[in-house]
Length: 595
Image (cartoon, rainbow, N blue to C red; front, side, top):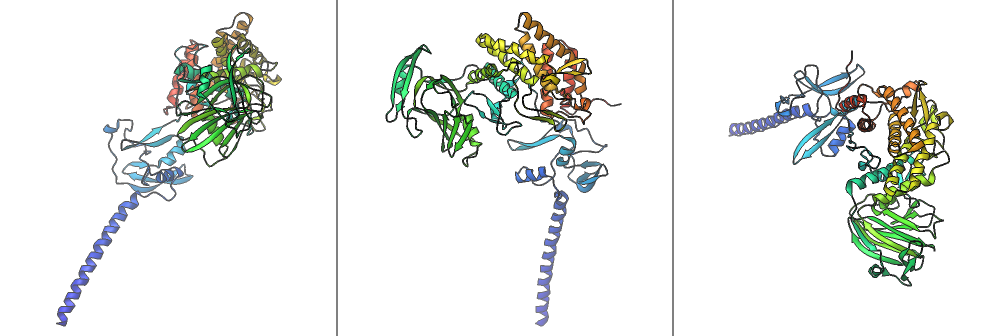
């Protein structure tokens, strides 16, 4: 009996041991396979981000760098031999300076893309299309926008319809005083930057040409429309004849207080956020726009103040200017953009635009009102606001001084407030020429012609003209000493000269033609100095100041390409067409030959 019990116990022990051994072996096999694929603890920030985003399970990105025994990886995917999954972890020594963890499969070596991206300055991201995941690799991150087929001074400016100047982080707001951007570039308090103002103008002009007339909803432009508006307590309204405007306008009178309901209209507009009208207020009145951002209501108040923009909770205030009471003012605001800039001030916990609804427009105080419209866009209003700024702010030298310090290279290339920019002059001329051709108002043409004077003044004397090798005139975006010779700014100045050359007559035509042709001569002689063999240089500081070369970022490289594409249409010059083809190839990783 005892022997039988012992046999049974031994049998149970053997079964338990066998089960334990089976589980242990299974675990060791799984761990062995898993350890071959696990990421190194020193995984890059990019991989960690991908893991956190759920875009990878922790394995190395399926982009690899192969050794000299590589197969043809330029072949289509379906013609390539799919690498085996028998990967082994190895150490890759980089330039005998440091190591990274790699994977080896026979004669191929796989490096993590996070290393490749930083080492070779290339780019990539995962894409998931209908459940199919792939990795998109690119040598550059920027896109070339092609200029119009026909270059005309009244046409679209390059491909500026793709520009959205006001959304840039370095734009504080669109001022309600003059309707142009306030830049925080180089000065957090904000300043008027002519280049930015012109780009704002030219982008809206180009958008208008591409999109055509906007959708419009008239809200008040006749006596019968007054009945569609509502009145708060103690509000008087009537239709009167305006001698100044030579038309009927609506006179209103109410309390100035923001707590007063005023003279208002209500709506639920979800697609048209451009609000335009003409008004004159003689009291301390105001204008308010009410918007709902998702489920939260915000109020935009436009008041007679010199403060550009401020906020208090869900109330955002724009200054119309302290001394503009009693003047007829053209009001043209993109309510969605004004709200976005207000949210950036961080007066509430809300920071982003959601689902927007324009709920109403309110007028308070004593004044007159006409032509109230809600539209899908106000491109030409914004364009002429900027063109008028160039007329109003041109100084006696014909320039638009930039009133901030610019340190291109600290201690070497610095500009004190009051400097001029050839790019600003060129952009300003391009804006003014289009304003003249659109309106036939000669004040725009006269202002454009007056802007030529700065091109004839040397950088040393406060102008924008530099000399290269004592032989070639160069119009400086940043007129420093020593000269910087920035390429894109110089070409933009030529575009402005070209626009004016196409419409000028008499002595102005002779002057602008001479400036333009001298510029083209310099560009032909100096263009290839900006070719690095795999990209372009932003400027020539390595030549003029003996400093390290300043390579152009890909977004500036694509600007150089777009500019040469346009120059190829303006000038019958084989150098431009050959060079732009080579520069486009650089974006795909092509390099110039070596010896």
